[in-house]
Image (cartoon, rainbow, N blue to C red):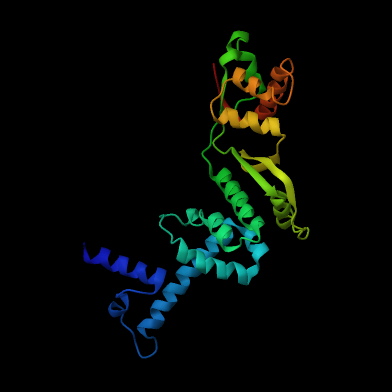
Length: 257
């Protein structure tokens, strides 16, 4: 191991746990001791990571409050040290952390899942979407095995709490609303259209159909599955309606017969 790499690792060990032999390598002065110098770096490192958490999870921050978010942030850094070269990805374990840390407030973990999905959708790779006119190029006999490719930003969530409504209230500064838990998990869709991120709830059959598209099922297979909610004669029209809606929202990037 090179001396520089060893020094870097010793410094990182100190930043993460304030342990190791780096203190013996830092020169202090009468005004600023080596301990003080190291503490400055450690505190700056910690605050930068907590700032990154706040950037990714502004609504979680609001729900916890400044003090609560800082305290959880310090414990999160200790439990899940940053290992990625980009600070953007620090925080991807926060949902798991909040499940363990706030077992009596499950809405916090769901909010973390929702906000991370929004960030992922915004940062997802770009891909040209198809319009409704793309359906005109599909031959009638090709619909049987027709499959669809979704935009890279598309994400599906199941949420038990009114997290999207809470997020919107916080984002629009309209005042915090009460936490509400649904009787059953509600399916949600998140995606990006051009430079804006969108989300909406789904009917249970549309959610199932969208999941089937993600699983690369064909139009015929999707119609068969939707028969759990509509009769066989109505299924193709119902699924075709979903497809038209998805095309209008720029969710589909390719049709494959």
